[in-house]
Image (cartoon, rainbow, N blue to C red; front, side):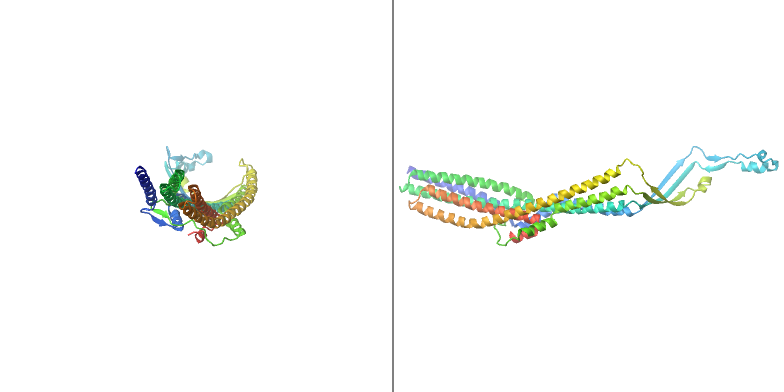
Length: 462
């Protein structure tokens, strides 16, 4: 009776434990909608704040590029001044009849000797001015070219951020899928170990096996229970990352870790695509172009600057001599040419030339590095796909071996250790296949990101 009660309580304990683990798994699915990897990526594109910030950078560069073109417009402004003098500005001629030795002119000279108002105390003068650079040595054209290159850089920076975000997202999404698959494997193994333990208790009761076999099956069940808890914790961590990426708690991944039978292109195809379109290389090309423009700007410092100027003057209404005789407009041409200047014009040009050579060397090295990266990623993707497919036979073998060992154990022809080894082997190969599949998917996403073909990812993974 005592042994019967002990076995009964142990059985209830295992049932309760399994029920708790099963409810934990169901909690992840409750009130959540399935979302495939394509729909999830579209949601990331809408909600990712880093991508939104990059979009603002593109808009800023577009505004600056448009603003640079306005440098061909003339500068037109109005300047005005109001002055209050402490007294009227006058001039009194000093005429004397003695100077002319003509006394008969005295009355006329006295009239001419009256003060002449040159300027009233209150003076207001305004001018509409226009300044237009006629020749700048190509400075305006170079400034526009730099702004256009900066706009292209902003677009390439947006592309490289999008590709990097895609790689990161695929890793996060399928990490959650992998964690769920591993948890499912652990749940299945825990069920099997629990059943094996119950079989061991029954066989011990009938006297077919020793108590040591029961203890071995109990230890194995405890081990699988710990594996189950670890897998559950890993799933919680992976799910938190996915929730953060999707900016929502309402979704669970529906895509599976499965490898498509669709073949990849050959290695040279991806190398050529990457060299032709990868944003980092194009940014380097833009930097080289920018330095070429900078050389033109440095050369412009050796040329004269010629501007056309003109003004239309407006004044207050007064009878003063200066205001009355002031011209109403003028036009002219101004020239500025520096023979000696502290701006180190020659050195600025030399620096631009050296920088250009430096960037050309960096570009050549970047081409080599990118080629190597694409080739290595391609080999990783191909190797992982092949390994995933070859592991299918190992899974079938492990499943069949577990069935045989379990059947043999029930018949007293196998030990508990052999059943446990078969369970461990099956768990190991299932997890290995899922992990290799995850590795293959990550390598594929990286390869397609390098070749700027992320839209083709969904032809391989649904």
